[in-house]
Image (cartoon, rainbow, N blue to C red):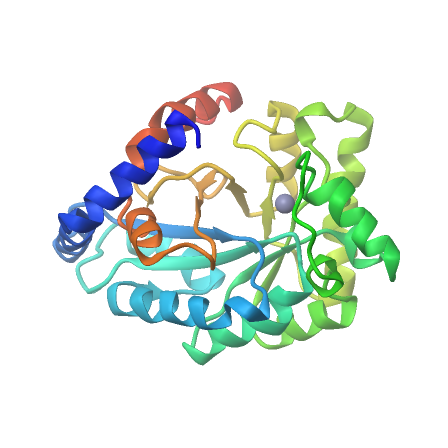
Length: 298
Ligand SMILES: [Zn+2]
């Protein structure tokens, strides 16, 4: 275990033992009720395998007691209303997003969210959607999970949802967003490919859902983006989500650059409480500022 991992785990367990997470959440609720700080949260999840369904349910039960689960449309409206007056919100809003378009996001996550009356945003990858049989597994390990020693997952956990699944999600009130056409790293892509990865991806998804694609989430790391790619994303989408943790302050932040906090179904209660409480936010402040400067987003 690295020193950084040890330090993080020590911090999380100390915060849980001292109930710092509950104190921070209580403070957030007070600020929201008094209109002092209209904070929202966006959660970034990846795999939601069947074996973790009960974990996900327990996490959402905890979340639903402390937050209001909102869909993308409500999240968008909040930028106008909530920033002026958040006092009628007893609990801060939270939006759930899922990356990569895994089949288990369709079979597990969508169903679990719906049982809480909620709808999410599913960021899909058209080239992955079009893979068949063994191609899916190859695509998954060469484009999505590119770790040197990736886990050896069962086949059904390396499959994408289908075009029919995507259309069904849209019919059921979920939003389907773009995660590039081929899970490309936009920071290392020739300029000539941007149109395909950003514009053609949205067109393909809109062809499946029959709805405009409002949301885009770039792949890999917080800095896997360039100013040129970001500008093109903004021309074709209303919302751009970054893989960079932080609470969203709709007075200071913009729909063109939305922070997302990664929380996975396999996280322990202490781990996810730390993230939802925003206790990791200060650790990412430097990266959020660097990203804004790099994109000239201020
Ligand atoms: Zn991804």
